[in-house]
Length: 392
Image (tube, rainbow, N blue to C red; front, side, top):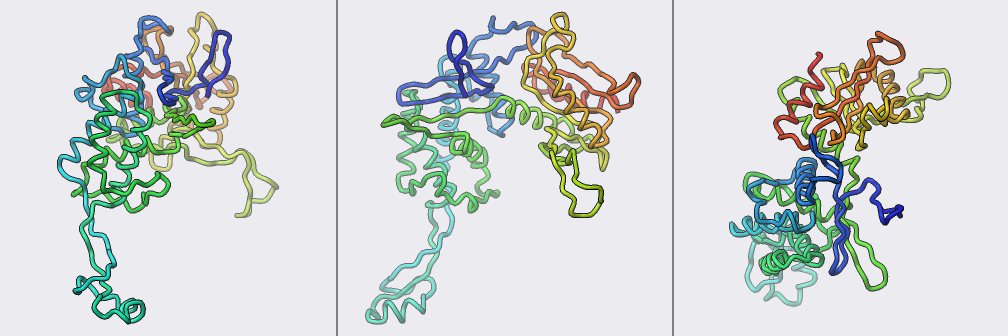
């Protein structure tokens, strides 16, 4: 996650928060817009807001601009802002009551309730006929969905440093006082079913998964415990582009596959039997499909392109070019694309440079493009739609 640089620690393509009792280390990405130079004129609060916007899109989190005005963009870390939003939404949800389901119970009662457990009645209770072994359903809040919320409240209570978040979490802990306090691994996630009766919990469940998932690691050294909420920017950028592009292609008749394909570069032997074994399996970031045809393959790269005046190749890796050429061959795809984030050191207009593969005038083309993460969402959607459909 971190390495020693010449002047201190340097993050290795990771963003998020490393938290220990009484301390939080926040790592923010450089997300610049047109005309914003790297490290100049972009406040931490602005970068934090842009990062949370990417997280919201990539992980389907309900982050509305209006709800964020009082959550401390300028002074709080990403973690504290997300905790604050979770508390705000959970408090709104519990005011309408905790979700409940009928849960099967078995009790020994003086009067019959529900169904009689015949086996237990004539074995264990054979000598006590005044007690009846009953099986009955009880409408209970002690269910998996509430276990998730209780576990999330407990987890966040131990790491937040914000007085407002601590107070909100204490109040929520009282609401869930009668709910079993289970670890994330012990929760029966598969029993959670969302329908029209409890659909309002869908957004909160997305938050809880984020806080309780494997990305939220717990580490310890001696008596000091810590938590991390970290995201590889390569993965986050890819997931963000995927989600925005899916929206852009909704009415186009095109489909989108992420981390799919799985075609192999090499095969053993000379025969074509069904048991052939492939080697060096490929997994393109994004495959755009139109029926059985693949018009475009996109590989996202969280790297800073170099202005052409400094480097004719603009810092594009030769291995990345080779990889895209292989995709064009394996998937019989005429257009392959390297997509980078746009940044302030590049020309104001987004880059869209087309190269012919292997020879001048070739049908197969490699496109090098950038995407402006700071532009309004509607403009980003239109931009990606044009990248995919513009020349079809």
